[in-house]
Length: 93
Image (cartoon, rainbow, N blue to C red; front, side, top):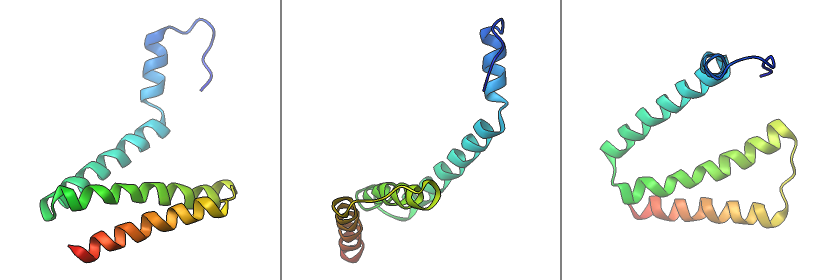
């Protein structure tokens, strides 16, 4: 967002809060929060919380797909360990 030099702080805050990107982000965050609460109703926190680590995997995959980034073999191995650890936790549940 580019603001005119004389724009006041209130105008900037209103412009940011009414931005479609901010509104979409808040909507997605709200959906995620509701889904997280539903997950916690169904399983123990000690099992559910480690699955937050899947965000590391998802962000890495999306950075390759959408931004054209490359993943070094060491990072791929680390992501594989995250996935492997989550599979072990899921099997033990």
